[in-house]
Amino acid sequence: MTHPHTSTTRPRAADLAKLDDQLSKRFIELDPEGYFIIYVDREAGLICADHYTNAINEKGLAVDPETGEPLCARGGNAKRLPTQTYQGRTAKELGMAITEVANRCPLSRFDHALYLGREFVRAEMALISGHDYIQD
Image (cartoon, rainbow, N blue to C red; front, side):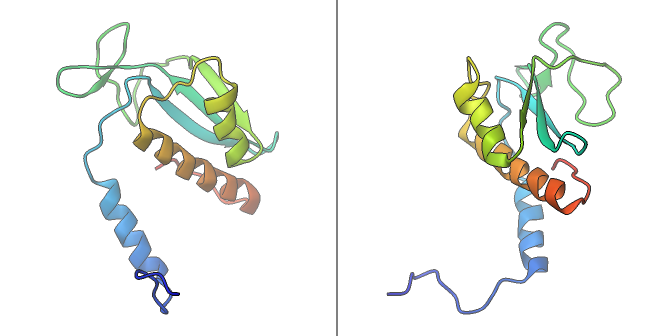
């Protein structure tokens, strides 16, 4: 039996990239538990995720919980220290470190967890291939 959404044609990479780009532009609510900066440590062979706390203000913006100042997504001047750094050799190991090993899981939104899982897989592929990893 064939699934009703099964197609015999393979999707084109360009079409999938376009769809992914469109989906990335949608509005998302921020996770009040904080955010992660993901990177690859090639020397150690690890995928790393630094967790930072934040608060969400009345406008829906992530703000520094200490100062109340909006956090800049790129190129911010303030140097904040992560509350925790998680590491794994694979996307699965890193995800388990955050959701199963941590004393308290620093996630409160399913969409945030799904996003992180996708990014961890992208980071793992970059680690394996030697390509650069840039967080989406």
